[in-house]
Length: 350
Image 1 (cartoon, rainbow, N blue to C red):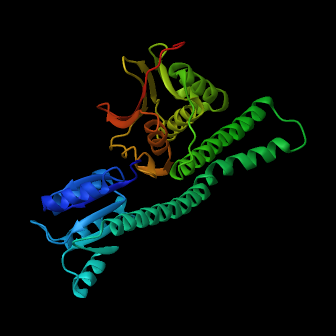
Image 2: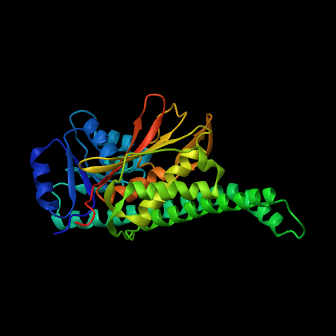
Image 3: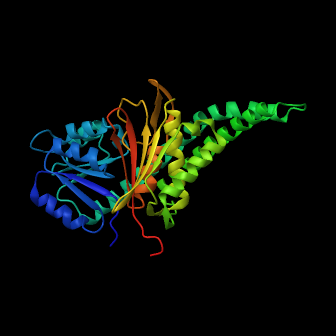
């Protein structure tokens, strides 16, 4: 039977946990915690779809646990079902006031519990999709404004009749190309992220040379943007990985775009082959503060201490790379931070 979603059970009763493990076995991925504090920590790490929360716990009660869970932004859509042997209306009301979504009375009926988990799992997905759609619309409205403010005037000047110096024409053409490149990355990234959240991100892994793909991305940057000349590229040699070429190229383009937008310095881009994975490292120069976790959806791009945009590169990398058995993390380089992408190696011609 296919395992679906994640359920966190917070309960100090081994018998209750054993029953839940039997009921949920093969249907949902189950994580358990023996007390409230451990349960909150586990929820932050695992980000479950549904939390089955016992009211009576050895440290803090279920109501306080629920309030703490509701204070965590990343768990805004996680559904909390309080579990108790008491069915009094007063206790139920306390649970709802603390932020619980529903109440399950012990001993529970297995089929009813499974049905409730499925219902709340679907509801969480719907809420997340609605929020994501709204966020992406706001993002597109905000992030397209800057490149369009350069593209449209430049295109109008190019369309004006009369002679124009070749240097001026080339400058205007560069502005149009650079704006178009950024708009294309933004459009493709938002589309891929939306498809991934709906479970429709199609991936076709092939054996490809990561070094060659990165070189092509950098060459394209040089052709359409003066900023591309700031990249310092270090490629150790052919680095064969197994990945979807189109999606991986989008990841590389997005990360290079963020690195260039975040600083006037020269970002370093490294491609390094290894025994089990191909490694891509994109440095964010002059970045003194840690980068956001790779799974953060809308991280800020900072430049000189000021927010200059929204970084979709990290989130896109996390979604695309982890779907292909790779890893994405942010690492410290001592005087700066970088994004590290690792993908499983492949043998060309194998």
